[in-house]
Picture: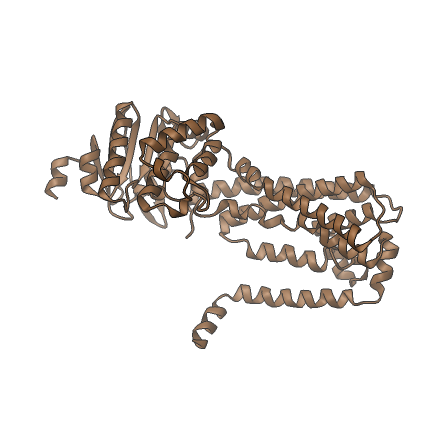
Length: 252
Length: 217
């Protein structure tokens, strides 16, 4: 039995490798969080306590962390063909199907944030227009990433690597729980490549007491999310063309 | 039409017309290309060569127009349903995808459930349906948009003889109403009893088959 299980486990080499790297990423995240500079980093950079920083990161994560897997369940092998023979476009179908999940993600964020304010007594300042802008851009980013993830799923039949990349980057370099200011230089640079950095930084600027000009951040995030959405739509079109030529709608 | 897959020619110069009110059955063994034929006609895949036209519209270039005119039973018809929803709730979902208004959809579904003998278990979850009921629900889904053309891929696979007969009755009635029906099967008796014309798909080639030949074989 042990030998059989070992053979099965080792046959999933990529999964094993990525799980190992995830564990190390988690270890580093907690290691960086234990750094004494974290407290001053959140106060100086965002004008909020460490607790307020962490809670706002966790509370709003549901807006964007669905991302890559947003449309996963609506393109299952047992359903994709039946939907594709109807006159409703596939893009419209996945978007309308995922609408409830998007709204639930937004509702969860609002609920968790309200609870953290009420129960934990955390103090925030509120730049409501910026907060709404960031959430709207977060949703747009999530949809863009969802289309990219869906394209991968349609062509490669799995999104494990992409999901892993997205979630791992959110944990360590996405400014979700670990402030980028305390990361080593190379990781700080990497964080600017992730959409999560712009989302979570924007949320902190909208909720923090610092009087930093948010316009550059909002503009950068707007460009980034528009690029992701456009890329996602183009990728989905290509994926659908690929599968129409290849014929591999079903894969089980 | 021609379609190659992994260095193998699945369909080779297949030419087929289905007239109004006609039922054409395509017989063939597993892997003979029957499903590929249905998938090309239902706009899911493209032929490498040639064209497929439904009601005058090209299945590839005018796929939206084609989708408005076809009802399709794929994979024997029982996939794509939510197991924890009832049959009518599942069909309401597909009615929305066929852009049918909810009020009209409910009337349609009630009618189809009566016609297909599903009304007794209307409120049961799909997961409790028998194989025969699932196939009939798959057929009901194909009939929702009242399409002039029906493309059916082994719609009675695994269905008991009584339910098969019931499905055949419905299909004959639909053909009398003027619907064009292309039905694939691996059952010679089904092809014989249902088809106005029968073809056998062998080595990628569609061979007209006389009913007497089926009986003899």
